[in-house]
Image 1: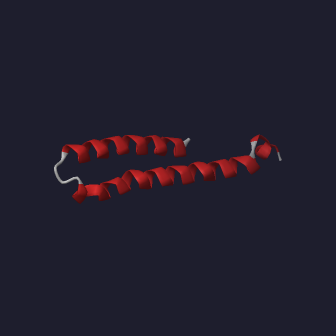
Image 2: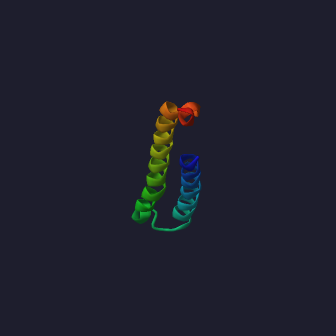
Image 3: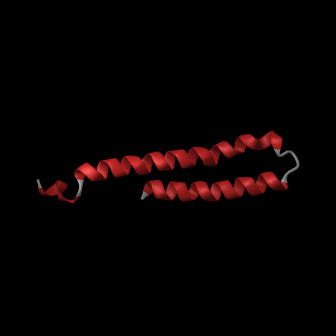
Length: 65
């Protein structure tokens, strides 16, 4: 769930950064701002995959043992 939320925040951050870059005159000077949404995207996907890998072996019956 946390990974999905971070990926959605990344999508919103992409929209905000791209809108800000298009509205400014020095587009080429501030392309480094795109690193923030891409970093959020990668962290969100990593957390999502980690959660999936932990949920699969633990599963529903983990507390029964």
